[in-house]
Amino acid sequence: MQNDCPKLILAPMAGYTDYPFRRLAREFGADEVVTELVSANAIVRNNRKTLKMLGLHDDERPASIQIFGSDPAVMAEAAKIVETFDPLFIDLNMGCPVRKVVRNGAGSALLTNKETAEKIMKDVVGAVKTPVSVKIRTGKNHADKTGFDVALLAADCGVRRVTVHARTVADGFTGPVDYDFVALLKKRVDVEVIGNGGITSVEKAREWMDRTGCDGLMVGRGAVGRPSIFRAIRENKDYLPKEESVMVLRHIDLVEEFAGPGGLGPMRGHLVHYSKGFEKARSFRQEVVSARSFEELRAVVVEYMNDSVEVVNDRAV
Ligand SMILES: Cc1cc2nc3c(=O)[nH]c(=O)nc-3n(C[C@H](O)[C@H](O)[C@H](O)COP(=O)(O)O)c2cc1C
Image 1 (cartoon, rainbow, N blue to C red):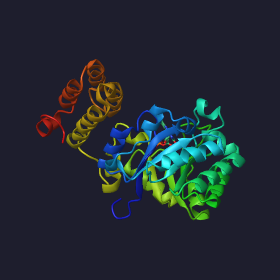
Image 2: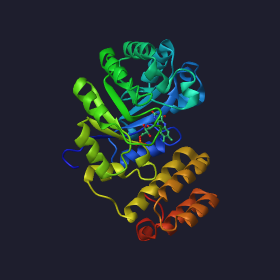
Image 3: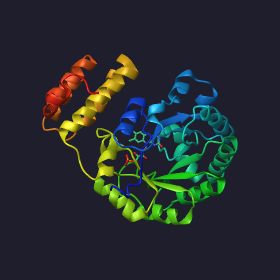
């Protein structure tokens, strides 16, 4: 996909899409990134750790901030605070199936509580100048695709972008995506429609575009262990291990610089994902787990992605 490449967006993923990963995705072809979901309640309570999650760096922009909650007044209040961090969109989570979130009436619970969903969207749009987007699923299950109604309400409320993870809540994270839902929605609303779900290859990205005509694609798990997927989709080709290893070393550098020693654990997790498909994945993972410093992690990467040795020598730049 070169000339006709749609907008490519890194999906919000709690525990993965921190600043180093978002920046890496931008460096490797993503047009936009989104923070993981942030609690509106915690924002309005001025929780210091939560407010830190809202900080965006200039070199990752355009970047959106996603919030979740179930109380329209709290969501509007939180959105006002979020606006001061100057995100591209304030994104409202209406798709999260995690029990802790749904139990409180937030996330995907809003797909079956249209009144509250509408009030949240109206109140947030009315409270801020920043464009508002919403991320939904198609519905609770295959018999109940209320996501469509919520998407139509969103357009009526002044929401400017609807991102559809084109699966039902019941389907979780597997199963086929509902291209027809997205294609129909694209025909019915004037707002931007972004497609999400199962984009793990250049071919899948092409299929999404051919089947839906949506305005952009959001990639989640396809980017974990392979942030260069954005560049691959854009340029219609896969990359050599040598080039991938430069990216992995770059990731380690970013985590060391911005997270410090606390980033060592999460970086090990990322490296396990990077090793998918490695011939010697098992021993690579063992060495990653026992590495005690960023320097040791770099050495393991260089050893296993050995095509890259002469390129990287020391550190990626
Ligand atoms: C570990 C993990 C964390 C996620 N966290 C969020 C989140 O914070 N907000 C959100 O809207 N979706 C979240 N999602 C859902 C993704 O954004 C995306 O909609 C979903 O994974 C489907 O896209 P994919 O098939 O490309 O992964 C998460 C998914 C995963 C796997």
